[in-house]
Length: 266
Ligand SMILES: [Ca+2]
Ligand SMILES: [Ca+2]
Image 1 (spheres, protein in one colour):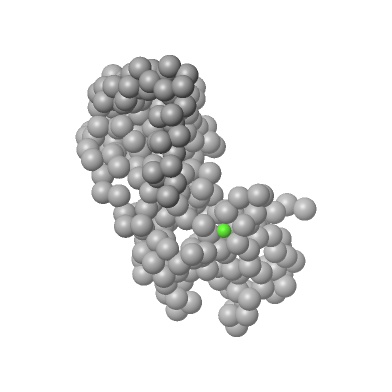
Image 2 (spheres, protein in one colour):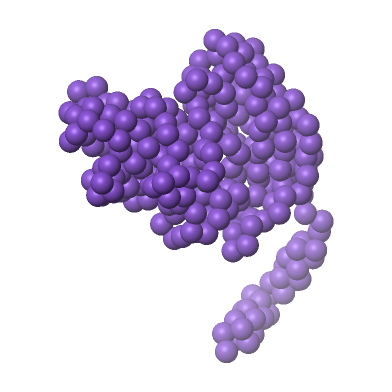
């Protein structure tokens, strides 16, 4: 009903106001070839780069096939970013191309030792323009740990040290990632997810268990966003496990995260 009604009313209004020519003009406008759009970054894979290392880095987004340069804003220590390839990228099932990207740029980033750790920002440039600034985290190679599958159960938990940042992904629907660390009674630790802030599709849930697999704390969303954060005073000296999963049981290539497990000084 609405489909038939609206154009009829529009035509009558246009006739009455003498604006029919203008309406036809708008139609013509729609058929013009689309203006080239500037690059748009959705997510970087992974979310963090190692300092003092050569990093393979994939950036997903829109309009990236003609990208020619990557520029970081912090270049206090010179680093190199070499574009190796640009291509179309598969859009995972049930994903929105505008959120996960349908094109990608593969870059090799060499970060010298002495480069400052923390969030850096970058843009991509093509013949059609320059992207908005996007964050990427730079961390010392000794702090940044890669997730090692299989780590999907308590028995397969990946051991990490307090102070580590894990770079991982919930790679498929139902995937659970489990980590374990040792801590002393009375120590306060924090477990923090950085995912959506870097463009990840993950909506994390974090849970911490004691050695007997009893839940001590769990968190879905924190700080007004979907990323999780737990702060916990360890009741005993021993082993603790952290599990991470997606709140909607989804997963995929763009469900990446950084998990920081740190001692909180009080
Ligand atoms: Ca995983
Ligand atoms: Ca969440």
